[in-house]
Length: 134
Image (cartoon, rainbow, N blue to C red):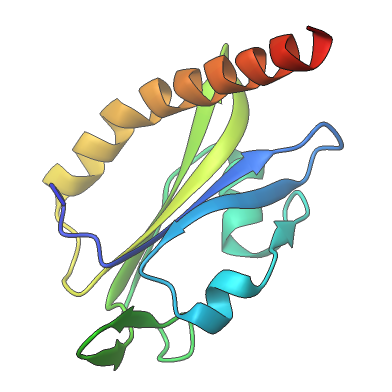
């Protein structure tokens, strides 16, 4: 809400090194039902993770992905792909779609929160492993 995101996906790195989508927002029902796994270096999300750098896309193609609401469907105008990390290891990627152009302030904010998100991902993994052991 803070940034006005209309569509989003969160990918988490698996033990084998690939990324799997674990959460989404604003996807169409069809997109939501598709399980998505991404290999390291594959597509924009995989490259952002591999290179550990933020990737921005402006004037996104109409078929990139759809935004769905009760009023209809549309396509994002801009997309930003943000790797998250913990202890200098990329452990996830956040993909955000906007109906507007990105500003330098948006990117600065995302850089600041990416590390916190990475730490939260690692904490959730730790709790999950602990539950499996118990």
